[in-house]
Length: 389
Image 1: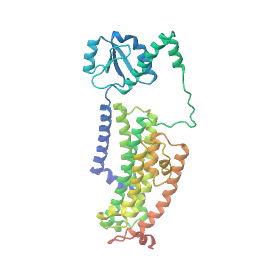
Image 2 (image 1 turned 30 degrees about the horizontal axis):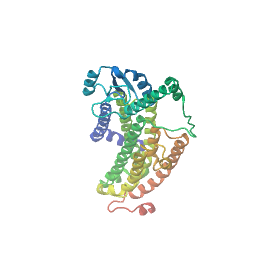
Image 3 (image 1 turned 90 degrees about the vertical axis):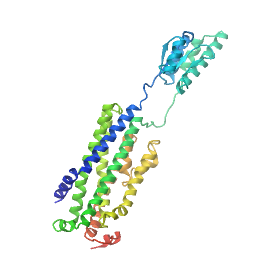
Image 4 (image 1 turned 30 degrees about the vertical axis):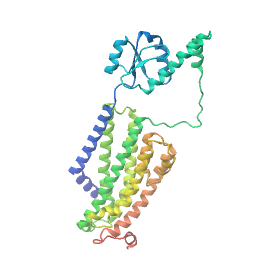
């Protein structure tokens, strides 16, 4: 009987224009995000620096210093007149005019911060070489000794750094799972009230038990939600890889999708049961928002905490603790997993917690739904629904 009810919900929802349009719009939004990310790439990450014959002696120092502080500089030998024209046209980022102190550099409007740091170090090195030569020393040996000097860092615990791609993936995961849980949970609530207000539920319950009806509805809409989430997630990864805006290894991307689906299913099972229970307390669509607001707030709080804290502090202990609590785990744990900052034991604890809570929620929701769904008219108080025989 549950399969029969679920099949009806699946068929009805999949034929819905609203479902198809929502899924298509979501995919189009992902395409737009990928294209914007691609267009936002303002060209090469390296800096083109022209070097005049008067400054040619500084080329080795310029390239070695830039490499030492991770600034990608590419030098081009040009005469001063041609170099000034290329700087004005944007072909060159800067033109090194003289190689003696003070070093002179020509830019179009402002100098790149990284390049300025490089040139400052080169200028200091040039002055140091001059002073070493004046004192009768060998600048090459002094430079080699300085280069050999190093600092050894011993971390007490390995750092957990999320790169930019993981951060973007984590944010998109957070948005997708939040919207999926919210929209599908509300669909369950609206479906319950629709059947109750039209008195269809009275006919259906003549042949099935309330628990079967509730579980069948939740299961059917969950399958539809799963299809939608999978389509959107797979489309997003495919679009990201095709446009080059996502360059994570395919294994990492697929792992994120798998965790997203797992947490959607678990989160949907928990929240949809709560939505179905509270929705059975009212008989009009106008009253749905009021009764589902407390459930929605739990969902919203988890999402807001994750989206506001995790991008700047992926290792937040506060978020880590909240992600282990079943009511917050569906919105927080998938994002932390996408960022790659979740120890295996935390993932196991969060999974075990929500899996243990779902049967309890099923029992509570079934009791409330069974006692309230046939009571039309005024809103049923939660206490009365719980106590009714």
